[in-house]
Image 1 (cartoon, rainbow, N blue to C red):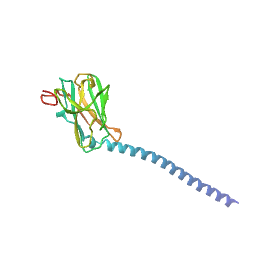
Image 2 (image 1 turned 90 degrees about the horizontal axis):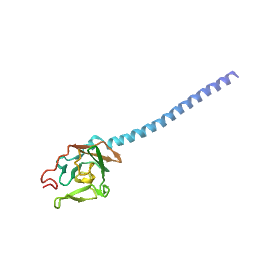
Image 3 (image 1 turned 45 degrees about the vertical axis):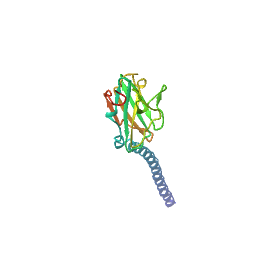
Image 4 (image 1 turned 135 degrees about the vertical axis):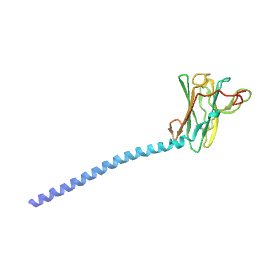
Length: 190
């Protein structure tokens, strides 16, 4: 009888040890799946908004200026070899801020006034299209009329662009502070 009791104790110790190992492995698997999902989502975001991608989305200094006669801000954004969903354009001036999203083929309007693709200058005022262009490996000039500026009809202090890649808003890729006045012959200035 002593040997039968001893075998039952040995068997229950083995079963308990096996169950503990299975529970630990199950908990480890659940924790690992959660950590792996978190890491995978952050790696995707990090790759989308990597510095190498941000360096491919720039403002062109020589084509960014403010037309003091017409109260119009002109700027040119260039997108290199990177696919972006949208481009967030932020203007700041006089303690105010105004932002627009540029999305290929879409309009970006506030109160009936729209950010526009720059086309040409018939007479002395700029003309453009409401459906914006934003494509890979292409630069595009845009203009913002005075009523859409952070302080209507006043030159903004800075312009900043932040790409949205794979539905993730990235850090700003470029900024121009101290926007210069347009010079004669640049855009619509005479």
